[in-house]
Amino acid sequence: MHVTRMADYGVRLMVELAIRPAGTRATASELARASGASFAFAGKILQRLVNARLLTSRAGHDGGFELERPAADISMLDIVTALEGPLCMNDCLPGGTGCSRQPWCPAHDVWANAQGAVAHVLASERLDRLAAAAGYNRARLKAIVPMTPAAAHEAPRSA
Image (tube, rainbow, N blue to C red):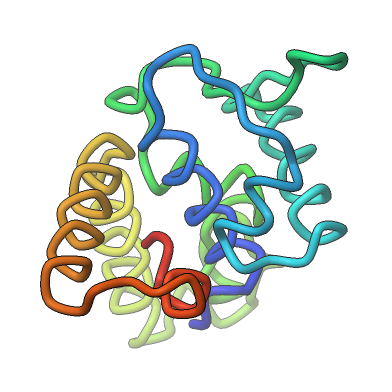
């Protein structure tokens, strides 16, 4: 199983919004820059997150994106499935195309358990905890390595 770039950047974008005070909006340009994504790719991800009702967007001078609900109510699983669809580690599992070998396949239960474990881990990790960890890590990094403008641009921005 491989986490796609879309899921990875989606988590980054959501963490960037969760770090900000509640009700604060950020533009697609600000979020793209902070996450390291191109503007076009960030825009595509942000629209999917809006469609999944994880974000709201507002147009205009004070427009931008903000979390639809509190960060504590959003899991990594919510973000990943909003961008990638249901978790599916193998065709024989829910969300897969099906497999005629499933009824007797000795590996089916292993795949099902693995998928369940991944889903459990992603569902138990909340956006507020990721944002807190990102804030702590950034503060620690700044204390260790004083940020020059060039270093700040290259420093990791989020999860």
